[in-house]
Image (cartoon, rainbow, N blue to C red; front, side, top):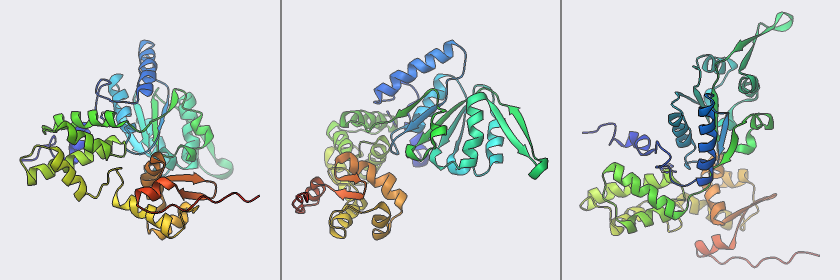
Length: 333
Ligand code: ADE
């Protein structure tokens, strides 16, 4: 029988750490947040507004939940694209209770008009609403309860600088995890799932996890399925290796789609430079998928470089795909 705790749909929430001790890695962020939250609690004030950025799956939402729990607050959660009109934001803000955390995911997708209503709300707890149109238009100001905005984004450069400057508590960049950290994360997850996971299998999953907890937990669940269907349910190194091979995840953690994008960059565009838009069109893929899913990890591995003229495949990418890298061109005098 499925219960919320063992149904795959609910697993991501079940695996989410809800105390600092269980939140592995990101030491500098944790240390800074502990001070900031401790001081705010001592003063009996809501913490200042916080911005988390970095590639998807590194634990930005998890941190927001952890902070909420730590200070004993309630979280209201929304996302940039969900707030279409000023009225949507006004309704969210006026429904906050004192001390609430407002979490806005994908903050780079907030439109300009929404951002402008957000500034005074963040800065002075005031909501300016314009009533009517033309010469008879009037602005009324509503006082909001004290609250903390936590925003998360994968694309900080798309946030306007006035918005960025209003995160008075700080802007924190989440880093990719080390293999050792991911190994500890999957070992913890396996325990929660009640699955037996061999140490070498945890290491293999960590190696292929793109340095990302969300991916690691996803791979762990697929390895657990494989071990259940083809073995005795114990996730050993052999069954994990077979499950990962079936998923076409290679030893660097690249998916079949990552390798296809690299192939296209090398074969169709001579290794680049090529613009993201052109590469996406050639791969029949969305720009956002390449830019936000494939590219951060390929950059991290040093398989591609971003230059002013576009993306370039590095000799490491050629080597990984078993191809000969072209000789570097001598600069023209
Ligand atoms: N799940 C997502 N991020 C995590 C982290 N940093 N530690 C443990 N589990 C996680």
